Length: 187
Image (cartoon, rainbow, N blue to C red; front, top):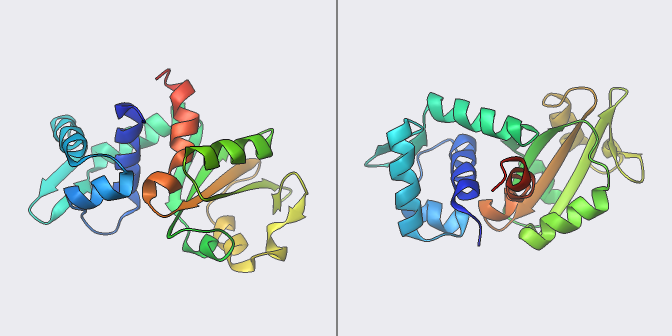
């Protein structure tokens, strides 16, 4: 069971990648937590000004976006965005890219940890010399998926990595937050 801090960050991350307001039931299903926990998280989020609760659902506020960005930055995650193109290479209905500063080290160990946390697949990409590569084999991403490589070019800077995780729910696709924030935030 994930702790509430990780669940709260994942809730804000889900809302930040969503174009429309989300209902409490949908949030509970997508985050694989109970509706009561979602209600508690949303009440806290409203008190902090991080979420706006309306009849039609919940949206993240600008203050919530800032808090999420700052919290993810502490975890070493420079940004997140949805990547529908990754479904062609990986499994699941939801795919999210997590931009990470620098190289990640043992990418096989990281991938395996993400799968153990619930992701059905993970793709780790590094950008060096203006090109995107798949470590540890060093093959260019363009060789496997030109459209995904093109989309990532606009989102990632030199000497950064991207961890794309997919799953049937956003909880599965947001596992890098759980992996990277648990230790960084000493949860």
